[in-house]
Image (cartoon, rainbow, N blue to C red; front, side, top):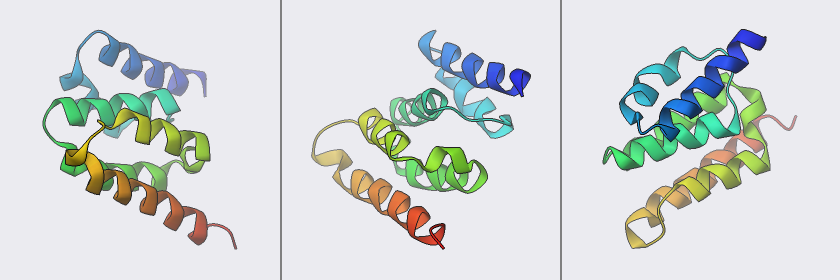
Amino acid sequence: DRCAAEKAKELEANWAAGRGDLVLEEWHSLQFFTAGALRAVVEALVAAGRMGEVPAVLRQILARYPNMRAAEVQATALDALPMGHSATGTVSEVRRIFVSFHAAHQE
């Protein structure tokens, strides 16, 4: 749906414009997700000091949008997380989440 894809692009544009507040408010209402929209959500959570919420949000997105379960999207999600010790646990959990979704949906 073109309108749904435009909403995802709008979310990305809001993040590019520094409007992390809008990204965090509006991602729940998207009917369609893109890798760029997912990246915007992850980066907005990190910027808001809410990195601990990334795994739960990712689970919601992957459950609702099967197109987001691709390896490229996992790479995008991991790339959106900060480097360094503070993110190690979150990075590991993000990897586990993608593996569990792949395993559960391979039947």
